[in-house]
Image 1 (cartoon, rainbow, N blue to C red):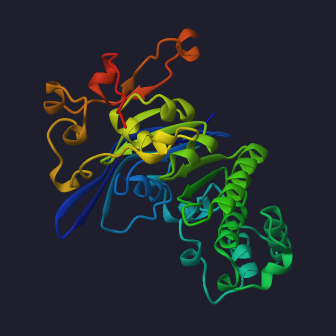
Image 2 (image 1 turned 180 degrees about the vertical axis):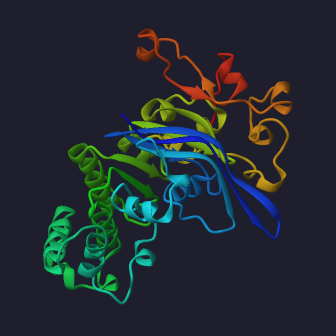
Length: 338
């Protein structure tokens, strides 16, 4: 069942440099009980996409298209209905837990706050549920009386996850939720998130720069570049066998375990993402692309199905992958060397 759906979503900021397109025509679906990962360089539109779901973008943002949660358009909701959907229908775990928590309030009060706002209950009952939520994410109930500065980074991120779960939402958005954590704590938090998705059947949108995180946690993956989705498909296939040269370049930048050459010579991608105010003609990735053809300068490729020979889904009559690349759509390889 489709839980969340983006339909031709556009987000444009207005500032001193004029109109800046941050998200350009994104179409995505998130199924209940499934996890979709969104990858890409800084500035590609990942966080803007996340913030748009709960309408947390600044007033300078102009949003068009549709964001459907259980078939209801979040962009058309009145503020009263939207306030009811936040926390209960969808919640978000932000990247900087220290900046997301209120420094002068105890943890217990902050976890209990959404429960008191959205449910008819007593402060004592909300506090009891807050204790249970903290224990569920691996924190002792005694941390109810702690302040954010008394917790480690991993503990603060667990508090944010507990808050996100407080009102039993159907959808959780994790925006770089493990970026600032060390490897061991990151693994624990990822295991916690994955377990909650399986246990509760919620939909999860996970945004990260770390492809290893996305490939290990997510069912599906979408790679964004210059505000557009350029590749989409099963996470393990997208990162193991890219069908867009940008996805291939991202994968080449990660060392391969057991490959000494990859460790010594990690791949890279020359140049920088394009200025969103001055996007190049044709494909936005063309100036950095190693496999670009003449047609790439004339037209921007659409995100279209790319059947993969030998794929089980193709053999069953389905389509395994989608790519916004003329070369991939013609069946040519898009592998980027190290």
